Length: 336
Figure 1 (cartoon, rainbow, N blue to C red):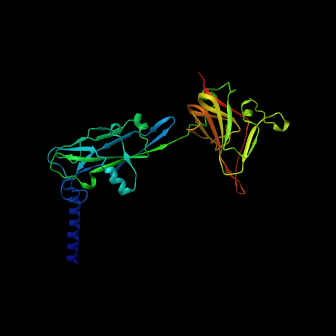
Figure 2: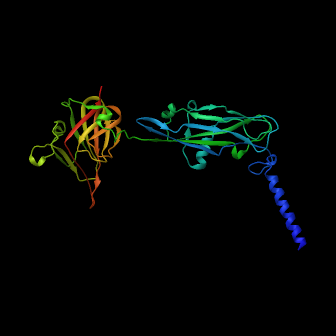
Figure 3: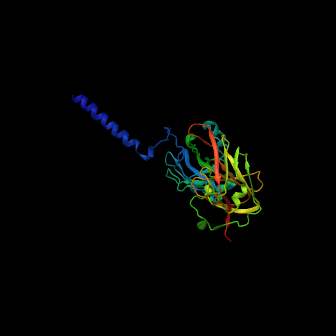
C-alpha cells in the first residue's frame, strides 16, 4: 500500500510540474506543435465579412477597417520586422478550394497603412497593427457580387520561418442591390411635390393588350375621379386578362420630366413601377407593397414613359387572372 501511495504521489508531482512547465511563456512552442520559433498572423484565417448595399440613395455599409497584427511562437532575441502585403494571386486558389467566385478589389480603392510591423526584442507580439481600409465614398465602385482581400506575410527581417498555416488571412466583401425607390411612408407634403399640370399631350397603351378593356386611357387624364359608376356619372379605364401574363399600362408624357412619383387611383399592391426615356431601356422603381394612390420616389428620375405592371394572380380554384379598375393617372415633380 505504501508503495502504491509513493507511485501516486510521484505521478501527481509529475503532472503538476508538467502543467507549470507548459504554462511558462519562455517555452510556449509553435501553435501547431513545432519547437521551432515561427512568425504568424495573429488574426484568424478570415477576418471581417463586410456587406455593401447599393440603392438609389447611394452605397452604404459598415466601415471597412481591418486591423492586422503578427506574433512569434517564442520571444525574439532582437527586433524583427515583418512586411505584409496584399497578394491577389491567392484569390483563384481560394475560389478553387471553396467553390466560390470572389474577385479582386481594385488596388486604388485599398488604403494599406503601417504594413511593416515590428516585434520588439524579448517580445512575441507586434507593437502595432497594420490597417487595411476602404473609404465609404468608394463603396459605389464595388459593383461585383463579392470580393476577397488576401493579406499575407511577404518577408521577415531575421532568419525566422513563417508559419505556413497562418501566413495568410482573408477579408470578404459582399454586395447587394436594393432596387426599391418607392418611399412607402412619404406623403406629397413630406416629399414636397406637386402635380404636373398640363397632361393634354399625354397618351397611354397596354402591353401586351389584354383580352378585355373597358373605357379609354383618356379617362385617366380627365380629372374625373367619381367612382359611382352605377349612377352613370363616373368614368373608368379597366382591363382583364384570363392568363398568367402580367399586363403593363404604359403612359407617354410626350416629353421628359424629372419625375418624383406618380398618382394612380386604382393602384394595386404587388404592382411594379418602371420609368424610361426611350421606351426601350426601363429602370425599375420598385414594387407597391402598401396600398396608397400616391407612389412617391426616394430619388427623382428623368423619364418620358411610366410603366405600371400589374401582376397576374392565381385564383382560389386554379387558373390565373390579371385585372384592375383605374380612374386617374398623374405624375409628381418636386416643388421649385
